[in-house]
Length: 500
Image (tube, rainbow, N blue to C red; front, side, top):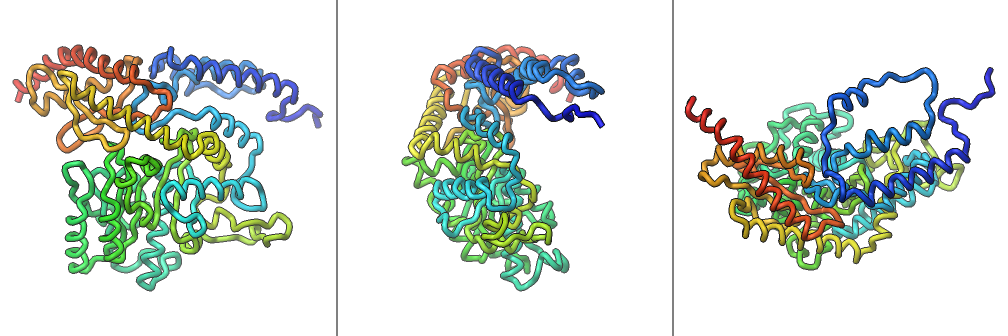
């Protein structure tokens, strides 16, 4: 047998040099990112090189691998580290969070069971997140997961358990046998992960009821109350209401206190999707907007959104700790421990969620929150909200642009309006084409969505380094490229209308 070290091994002095070089390369990347395009499309050759490269028989040099990653991969991300990236709800990675990921990877801990530092640290990180939304950390249970989708699935699984226990049946033993019409109430603005979770839980998308919204695209609590009463009279089981604290499309916050009153009076579970906006509850001027948030039975938060914790990191919070444990607990003999004996520590996190082996996500949450402090979080939210309001004002003041919805948090939805009229189909066609043109232009980045019958552009202001000048650049770029797109799409649009 050869005495040579196997593939993963590396001389520690070589690792030290490579590590220092890596930090230098990352620092250069972050320090100069404003001078680069927000988004750079890959060439066909680059795509082929990344997706079709065969695995060689012999090892490559670690330094060559590192430099190839920096030159061929790092510049071709989505661009959310750039101050002029306004797409979806993606924040930049906090620098200390980048270091946290490196430390966590070096430890290589599986954060599910044992009297180990990562498990105790997760309790603290989750407690801090609980306090932000007004939960009592002494009774709440939370678990860090990959993101909002898994957090939502986790919380709605607990909601299903609660419904079963309340109605006197065992969902873990019997499943969804029988004719149980368990209804979930959402709005057209609710994130798609909720529908996916309902489907995965075996409830069926036909069990989803769409509640109307008001003029600000918030759930109509009075309409919810009427729908619940009608459904109950028809023999259905109103099961869960999902309210949103910061929708993806416009940042709208549902009237949480009113929705909580309706839900709990009807014996339903209230889940709040706060993946994006729940952290804004710390904003002094917005506290009234989030009234009722702490009355939710469960809340989804995404530290990898507004808090700038590097992707991926979501959090599922449940007010009833023991209910959450009853929902998921299944401890095989080979994982059973006794507290105070051997590796025995707190209950395994696998008893509170879907995963068994889990990464050390808590370290980056703990480090980012400590670096910011509560006041730093308030300052970040305050700054981003103020910049979003400034952007809305710029849109209002700029001929050819119009707001599509009143911004409530830090999302601004707007349209470019062609000079040749206000035909809805025509405006939609121009804005769809404009979205693509802006993304490939590289100077700024926005995404689009649909509000009713309108296709709109939306800008999410989450970067800690975005400036007023960046917003002015966004508006001027939209106007300049919009005029070009308007001319290009006019001929095709007129031809299409003539055909019909």
